[in-house]
Length: 225
Ligand SMILES: C[S@@+](CC[C@H](N)C(=O)[O-])C[C@H]1O[C@@H](n2cnc3c(N)ncnc32)[C@H](O)[C@@H]1O
Image (cartoon, rainbow, N blue to C red; front, side, top):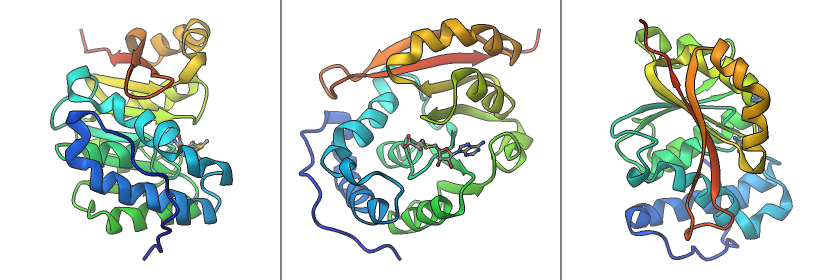
């Protein structure tokens, strides 16, 4: 069981679609700002910016109005760390099932405890694996995943190489990339193509909800000809 701290910033006004998840997201914010920081999963200076820099930065990508994460999607989050974006998406979107792929035991332990604490065990699976080795345990063996995401894990080309085998044909890579997105796509575009990911582009989501808005690179796994 994870202990909680109460010294968490007040939740901000949430966009309407996210309001039903407000209580659960607040509990997750407490877990991040308490044991997440105590155990070194997030830096000590992150507490005041848990909402903007972490929870909302991730949540806006799963806004159903954006259409980046389809209804009922099976999702994997590579290098989930403390659960970003995977746990945020699972809390924000009860229609999703989410596999959190993480290589470090300390983080896997925290993710597993959070999944229990937040009542997510029926829809969230925690897999301890290196992404490049863990595909068969992330659902790809039975037809692949609809969406694979990652935030702050590796250069775009590497993320693409790890993610592509997990994505079903026609499914999507949705990589949270920040300011470097255009530069990374220009540099690694050929690697995406070589991994079977096509129509790659940069999108900005969450304007008016989070500052700065979140920048993502999306690309589709090519369908067989
Ligand atoms: C900088 S942290 C980012 C964590 C989280 N996605 C976030 O945005 O806060 C990178 C995480 O990726 C994990 N990681 C790095 N390489 C990995 C790999 N090949 N497979 C699975 N996890 C990996 C690390 O253990 C770490 O938890």
